[in-house]
Length: 72
Image (cartoon, one colour):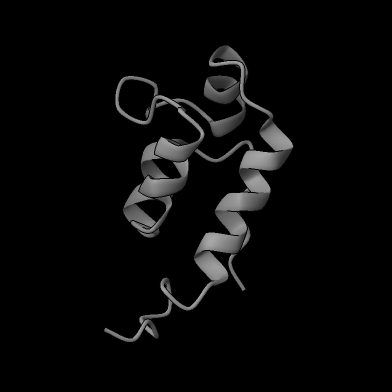
């Protein structure tokens, strides 16, 4: 089971779990210029609920799309 935490660096999370790009975009977290910083730092700077973002990221990496189970 993957566990994403607020102290993980955004770029590393995206590299490991590409499905998280949509979550960062949905929450309007700067995953480009802010991607070299920890999730918590960038999310707070962008005015985002860190706990909600981290929960959404973990749901995304545990969901069927992340496991390649989505039917076309």
